[in-house]
Amino acid sequence: MDTDEKVSPAPSFNFGIGQNKAPAPDGTETPMGVLRDPILLLFTVICFLFHTANGCVLPLTMQSLALEGGRSGILMSGLCIIIAQTIMVASAKICGDYSAKFGRKPLFLIGLFSVSIRCGILVLLTHIGAVNGSNLLLRICILSTQLIDGIGAGVFGTMYVLVTSDVSGGTGRFSLTLGITTAAMSIGGTISGYLGEMLAEDFGYRAAFGILGLLSLVPALLYLLIMPETLPNYSDKEVMMTSMGKKKEALASIGENTGQLV
Image 1 (cartoon, rainbow, N blue to C red):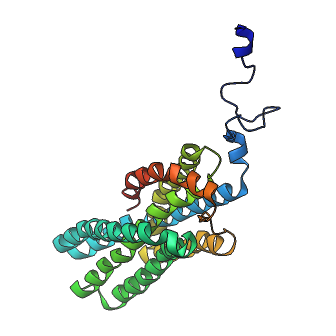
Image 2 (cartoon, rainbow, N blue to C red):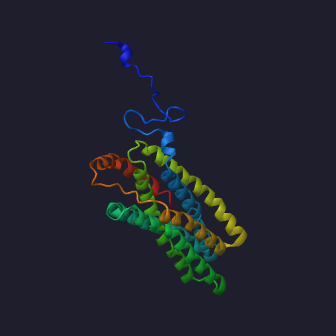
Image 3 (cartoon, rainbow, N blue to C red):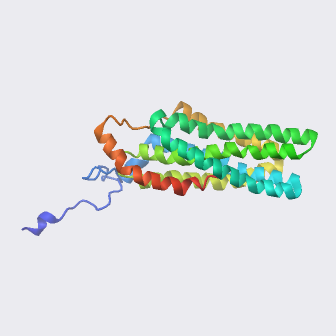
């Protein structure tokens, strides 16, 4: 057999730059082709803005409880994480069970708007504390806002992996798209830490919660008004086979990422 027939001039990994823009022979999209997807870019911006607003709310809540409550405040600040993590597991399970039935968008919106609701409640509670003074009941009410945090973290941690899987459907680049959205989340969370502490130091906790709550409305409204429903059409056999092939990879990523959201 002629050995020249076995040699292919095509690159082994096609980035899609310059003239190499066509998908690979196996149908895999090029990385540059994936990056040009407007839905992926929009979803990446949403992930970044969500974590920019949400990442520092928990530390600020813990600080406000610890500073105003003495020893009991330190205990309550520790309970913030326990409560949020517990609720997060339950909400993630619900999303996994019903995301295919009700669609991605309604459930995801619950997680996105949860930050605004939580910050609004914290603004009200910190205002009451500033007027009437802090007491045990008020600190318990502040602690209870972590129930909303657990819901938001569980929903976002589950749904963002599923939506990423939907967006990358048929491209063969699930790991690449998941890396992009996860990187956007990490960068947003890093910026959030600095932003939240700066707002709390310069304007106080009440103003910080208010500004973060308004900021969290931006990704929620973007998803509500612009982002389409990404749930695959499971009546299409080809789509269903592609989705089933990525299901295990997506579910494996959910457990690794939800724990980073609280």
